[in-house]
Image (cartoon, rainbow, N blue to C red; front, side):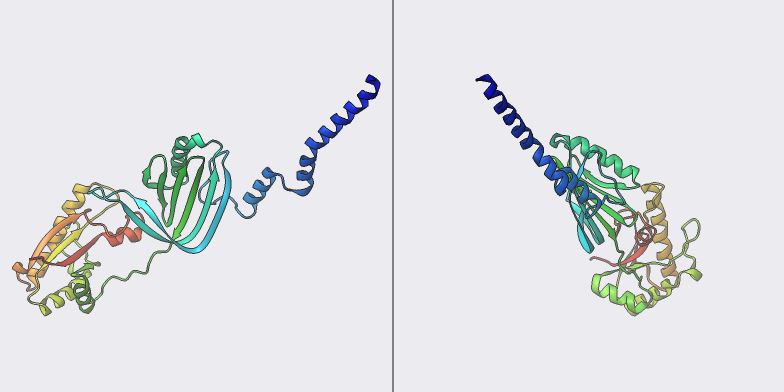
Amino acid sequence: MSAHRFPKTIIVVIISTIAILLPALCWAQGGIHPEAEAAKLETAACPDLTVFPRLPLSTIVTCDKADSIEVAMPLKPDANGYAQEKLVRGRYEFREYQLRDENYQQQAFDNLTRLLGSAGFTVKYSSSPSTITARNQDTWILINVSGGYYNVKVVRSIEDPWTPVKDAQEISREMEAHKRVALYGIQFSPDNQAVIEANSKILGDVLTFLKGNPGLNIDVESHKMSNNGNAENDLEIARRRAKAVVDWLEAHGIAAARLQAKALGRGKPITENDTPLEIQKNERIELAKTTP
């Protein structure tokens, strides 16, 4: 009897072996092995980002891109604790990654923060262990980490065209619309205590505007936001510049009672202060209609 059962046992073993090997053979021949599909996805439709590496042992899950998308980048809360954000529009790329372990979130967050520094990015805001906003010149990155996944949004920003006011008519239009106007192109002496008139043409247009509006009182606000030094030095420079502009206007016939010098230093930036153009925009003299 045992001689008849032995062949049946062999047949059962052979059938079981085929059942185990058949899916692998199909994957190998049909190209549907999960790992092979993941590799295909990453090298073809979803390659690695060029500006920011992924974490080791993470796998790309999905991706997207567009020529122009606006993304809200979280920033540090203001002095009153209110949330702030910057809307950045530009060329867009998106990657979602799966981590090797869903309990890896805090470690992933810390490693991503370090990777940003190595890739030349400055962290503008972070909320551990979930959100990081970073920037490198015109490239912004927003990273969100959640459980066993994280995603990266990259936006290469497009700066809006910028043309400062250049004559009395444009100054008048800005004051009418916004009750204030930003002035650029005023040059000061090395000690910031006097205006260099020959290199400050815009002041002649300010004078024309003020003489054409004799009932208008204004604050002369000075804004200075250097990317080195300290806030106290910037505030002192702003104080000297505001007084220098007021002194010049008084010397050219504007009554002292109509003018008030205000030094704001770094207090009211109108943009980030990372690129040369942003630094140029922030460093300005503003005329503001005096509030009664």
